[in-house]
Length: 583
Figure 1 (cartoon, rainbow, N blue to C red):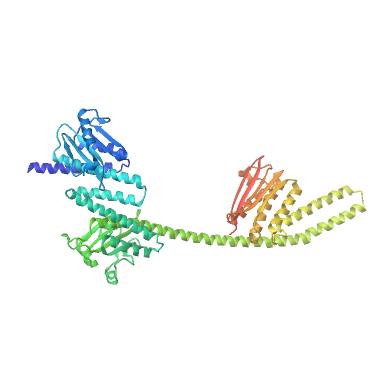
Figure 2: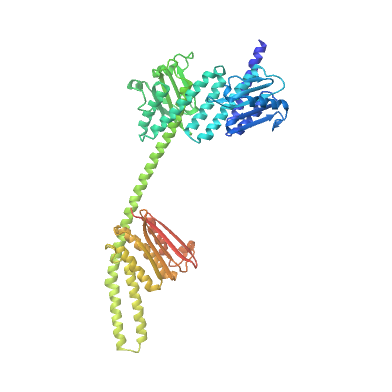
């Protein structure tokens, strides 16, 4: 009896060490790293002189002696490797280790697939407990390697997350129920299928374009089919303190809803709902359970069994998802719990996505309103500027220019009447002519007479460039390709952008060549004015006298919902670009 007790203690300690080995191996992602780490555990746990792991699929053969990693040099160790080489993977089912001499060899098998061998060797034989320990350890190593292989081949997808989690759950289940290992493996495989099906259901319903209520209605129906339940229900936290059932759940009728009560739920509470929601407690109860602890929950709901898991989105706790009244005689299983967990996790992400989309749509709506207001403001500003310019042009033409013309005629008569001051009068007359020309140019820029006419924008731009040539003698290249049907406020904005840039060239650039381009590109007018003049430091342009027009270029483009860019350096000229949306 004492020997049996000692063996049980040794086996328990061995299982704990196997669990520790699994925890160390699980984070590793490369099969070579897993093999190197596993060899250390095999040598230590099996009190062996040498160990090897062979995985032909990845051309891996890792060996280690008790003195450290490296090529096996001992003849006895080499004999172990020869024994392993003689084994054909297809001839081993991995159910029991090979005991040849003082070697213990076991197949690496996971997911119904044998993909390698591992073995240890020492001077004295291995007993039955050690062989069982090694079989379990080999299974753990195989499962970790299989998870790494799936991670490598499948990438960062939801199926990989499902597989990794299921592998961890399967490992835990195997530790707890080692005596029923074969049956557990079948249950885990079924859990894989159900978990994947749950994620697929979430994905399909999330992409269907329905609102959240319809999404959860469809999802609860799919989950009910997967776990074979009569009822599946999402409970949502409201106002941060209470838990209430969401409408439209599968299998929930008016009588059932009438039995549901809003439950208090908070992180600092120790009731069942709070434990599930805030502390990741997985609840499962049935009337057939020996324990009567949760019978009151089943009585309150009027169901024979129930399971529930937390429903969350990242760190945000949304509530819980529950299934009631299993259609299977044995009731709900651990696999059903896994299905609910996957569905709850994915549903939480969909919840976040849907609300993010709603917030984005609100932002888009606000931006559209702002853009509409901006366009209205632009039209109003353009209209106000045009009216003011028209009034200014009319007053300038009817008053100041008429008076300057009359004054010029009077001076002409004075020059013929009295020739003594002829030179002075001529200078005055020339100055008046220059003033009149400047005023007429200003009058043109303020209100181009042809801008309202079909093709008026092109004509006005060409006429303004003719003024540039006459004043500066610069060679002007023009690439003009704009439609005639532009709205007036946009034609006015384009002309003023070009006129402002040209005026800057006339006043400051002393340019010999000017290139201007106006094109319609991807629903927007792209303008470019480039000269080879004196240039300036762009960062200092606001401090340069006479350069306030450049600021108005920028402000006018931004007001129109477009953009503005200026490049210039002293001595190499200036390049001004702007974009104005047509729509």
